[in-house]
Length: 501
Image 1 (cartoon, rainbow, N blue to C red):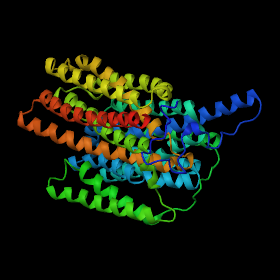
Image 2 (image 1 turned 45 degrees about the vertical axis):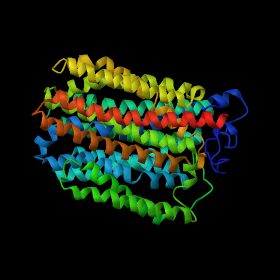
Image 3 (image 1 turned 90 degrees about the vertical axis):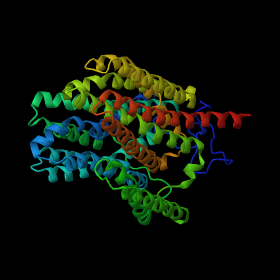
Image 4 (image 1 turned 60 degrees about the vertical axis):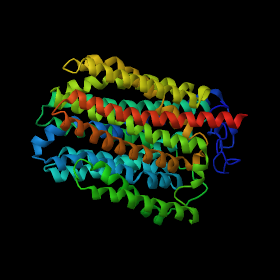
């Protein structure tokens, strides 16, 4: 335990609000005196977590499930390529926009209320997307879906911080990590299955309808099981901080998510503008009486390096599914269901390893994350070789083992890294800290897809349609991002050893 929950600020003693979990300075989870009541309290904690995970699964699934439905949407609503791009990028953009403000709102007011508001909005937006009569209506529904997902997700990490302590918190984050990995990887399979069952004409609508009954049931359970508000030390909000950060995130994300649609190089000036706005946000937060983000977070090495690892790793691992699905469906003419099945080994490996990683992260700490990243690198390198040897229709079988190995490594990265990153964050700051972490993940995802997609499509044009070679070129960029995440993890290990001398 001491290896995981050491003080890692690198600037002397940790700030007052951010106390290591094992230090015992967080309020104990309320329990009664008897063993039976303690068991009942523990059971309700895990029931509450189950509701959170179901909702998180829905919102994260919608990042990837729509990919395989795009051809059906194009035919059904007579959509242009630019409009189809907005179905994907609009969701990612609005999702990332509200993560930090909604996390702060949950910390300052009521995580249960904010969670339920986000869940209700997501359910309504899913129904609206399903009945969409025009492509414009569908795009607007997806924008609202993204807002709702961004409202909901930081509350999940905040509630885990609030409800769980010590090793049990690691297991809870392990379950969340499994949800993140499985939702990202299983989306194409589930989307392909729904389209296969309902038919290409209407199947894409069920990609959205499937959220509605699940959302309604989760709302009822959330009202019954999630804890009443626990107020933090600060109850004020930060309107100017919200505006500055929101504008900065939009300026950074917009040219990334529209990289394939906006051909002018002037779009990259928006990233410069975003950097300026984020710098202004940082300057304001240092002076604000009730800042939205306490910048003392970044004096904690566990948090600063953990956020960097998350950003770099998400830039790599989410781009795998983007280019692999294109390769299979467009290059090899796999059906949506076949493409989804081909990605399933990664999802299986990620789910199994995430649950295991959450249980052992308290024992091994950051070395576990570094080991997971090494396994991911080996798995992706093996996938590169498999595509070199079997570039045709049999590529799904050839890559099954490498993707399973990469998934196992991924499960040892996402959940343990999130546990370590938030290990020194006081539970009253859990939502806003998780919002910053998840914003980094969204920026990483957008960056990775833009960079990998550019290399992939450039190789496709340069090789006159060699999809296998283009996929291998994209994998090289993905490996670069994963190796950069590994370098950050190794830097943390080396700093820890120096501090221990």
